[in-house]
Amino acid sequence: MKKNIVLTLLSLVLISLLAAEDFRLDILWSNDVHGGIDRAKATFMNPEFPPQLGGGASAATLIKHVRSLKGPNRDTLLFDIGDFFQGRPVGTVTNGRAVMDYMNAIGYDAMTIGNHEFDISPADLIETLRMAQFPIVSSNVVYTDTGEFPDYLRPYTIIERLGVKIGIVGMTTTDTEKMSFPENIRGIDFLSEKEELTKWVNHVRRVERVDIVIVLGHAGLPYDVEETYLTRYDNQGNPLFAERTAVWGYDAQEIAREVPGIDIFLGGHMHRGVPKPWIDPVTHTMVIQGYAYGSNLGWITLKIDPMTKTVSGYESPAIREGSMITLFEDQFIPDEEISEIIEAQVAIAERGMDEIVGSAGLYLSRTNVDAQSLMGNTVVDAMRADVNADFAFLNLGGIRADIAAGPVTYRSVFDVMPFDNMVVSFRCTGEFLRRIIETRVAGGRHGLVVSGVNVVYSKKLPDMERVTTLRIGGQPWDPNRIYTVATTDFLMQGNAGLTLLTSVPAEDITYHQINLRDSIVRYFRNNSPVRTRIDDRWERNDNARPSPEMIR
Image (tube, rainbow, N blue to C red; front, side):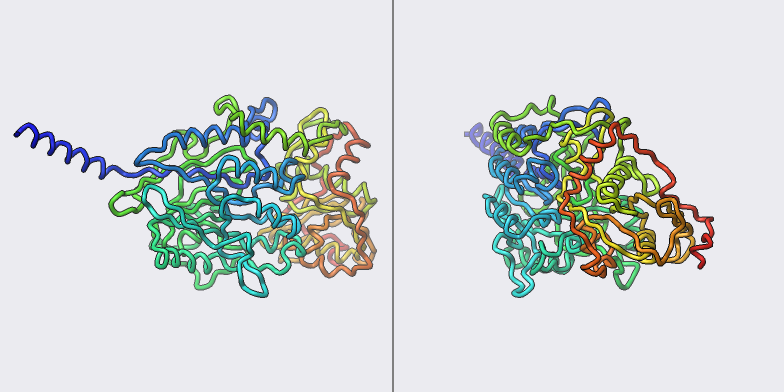
């Protein structure tokens, strides 16, 4: 009898200990994939001998492994944080349908949408998003006329795992309005990230009675996280300024501090991974984000108290990588089933991509130094040559890849310029041309990628008076002369802060119907081996004084 009582007591103790053990919720996520579900070389690690990345098929291997850990006290969620298709051929050519097929096949639980989803027409975007076999969430994207959510979106969804009720709230950066073609977002409003998240996080907490809130937010942390925080808030987390003056949307750090009730914010948009979460010292909201182009998969394990159903901590799967798992193909052998799905789509999308169009005489890097890069200079030189312009310019962020020395294929050019920007030229006075340059060196801006000019500017001079020397085609700038200027349709729409371009009269604009990629291809065909240089086209000199023509 006593033996049975002892065994019963031991069993009760064991059950109690098991009940007290934290649940573990493995959260996997991708962000800013930009069509990178195919195999790729990790040139960002080693340009000369890049390791092989397995893309979506290697991600599938890792996802299936994590899901195999499922048990009574452990489960998994899989999310995407937006910008999921526009960038690589398999994503761009199919308008994202190939990437959506992949996401359906591996079983995503939810996603939000990013700014680059709006690079295609509304009809094409809707067709792609309606393929999703999982909810798409964004709490701040609504129709202008009705204030209602588009039928392909909802503000949140609720998922239950381990008996825990989890609210998944989405958010799309309001920067989208400044980074998209107006016709693609006509009729859509991007409401304040902070206001809408505050409303909907409060809703899922109080009305839906969720235990945990996860935000899928297409926004990221600032590069200098701690330093930036101290310029915004005091030691108690109080704002240092009565009003927010930033022209860009709220970033993930501001949301974490100013929107209460979020347990973890999964971010993106910045293309910069954070190995372990940054935790706001006041709200204790965790923020974490991954790298881009399908190079990694995020993985963080939330520890959940089974009694209170609240987050009690977290674990990262790796010592060095933390939560950023690089998808090396030799480490994560591509899943055969998923690989077949991806490769079939790649074969269709990449016909003709490996045609050699020329050669590079040296490594053409996109890394900017004082508004110049070898790759950037090559692109604007190509644009200017193709339409016989006096001056060509592009925004600094418009160049998306390097080109290695040696043969150059159409694929190489596509990687540099994955977006369907078209070459546009217009006629303007020298004074208007100067204002374009001044706009991009005003405040904290760092210039433009330029061709056909020599610019010297000083940051010590007042805004709109910073250009001290300007030569066009080797000749002194003339404020009254009419020049021909080349750029892209994206910038002509007033993006990248160049709203003054929208004032150019229609009769002075020529739409050449030339894709910028084709201009670059022609440049390589006609000038190979291309040996672009960093030259005197752009120079910052804070001690410079205005030249005589600038004074006049």
